[in-house]
Image (cartoon, rainbow over the protein chains, first blue to last red):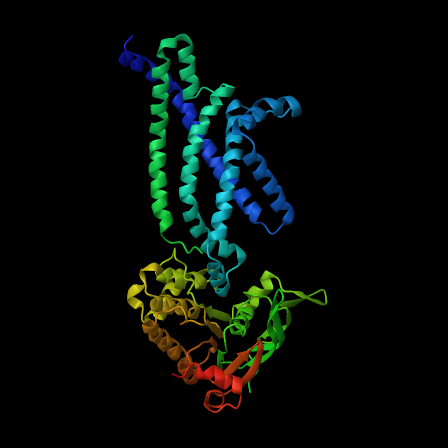
Length: 223
Length: 256
């Protein structure tokens, strides 16, 4: 079979997995942002217990590998504690969100801290409450600083979704590997096409990151 | 003399081992204009930062309108003021900073509207009207939709003054507001302060190195040295013919 007709045959197979990859990416991205902000604020809290607990959580998830976390949520939790996360899909989303959320929480924390202290002082001089200072003055500037790094993490997250094939979720990689099992000679073409697929999904994310970098360069008072 | 709007009673402030203020006693009358002068490190800026609640005094009492700023009563005991107590009292205080500290993500107009809207509960229309009026007064009526990074240092500082003025404080603090400016931009900022001072009702404390300006604007000049008030009086008394050798030495640096 010629490579061209191979492509014609493999393409629809991979497209079947596209859904899962993109759905996992979007859901995980949403929840990682959520985790990132909760943990980021937790680490800035005045409450020492809250601060230490979130610090512990962040270091655990940053310090261990995503694939093992995935296996934990998938195999170990149900066996050890009888905790069933409902579906394979959600086990994967939780693992990825926790892992990336932990990394991104450091971005959240760092960005908030790097807004110049003079901004807080000016807000105090206007008699704003602590909450108003954060919402009106600090966060809008901090988020501009977070954007480029968030973009980078999003691209990394896309590539990390390929790990879910290892626990049997039918994403692009899973579909491709299934195909090579019965068509060994097509292996190079399959992996080439998988690369192209990932790159095509990554392109808009790369564009988004570039845009974010532009945004972040304006409207921030950093130290 | 009318009841002082601000009172410092034996206020001290230490940063670690360093005693920056060593017992400040100071009454400020309503509408009084005070210039704080003194060598760097003498504690001038710290005095006004304590009043703005940016630093907490180590000991002593600061009163605003006869209310204790840094302490409040709780179950019959005086305890450290919480955020709510500070907010109740510091609404009467406003401040302009050496480095402007404008909000870079807002336009000039928004910078001057955010306080009145979110803190004083003014409607958007009212806040906009007042902000535009104030910006025109400081000579920036044509810049309302610009962002801070599009302005010169002198313009930024004038915006910062408008932003503080729309809050209608009873006491306005100026922290070396011309020190970060290029020399040719100092005049326009001082001119605006002179205008504000002429209008009257607001008390002003100016930390400054501009001696001629202090002589013009101030009712009273306070010379601070090593954390204590070592000389004070009318501009003539302090700048004219002081007997203090150290003050003379300090002043001689400004005469060239």
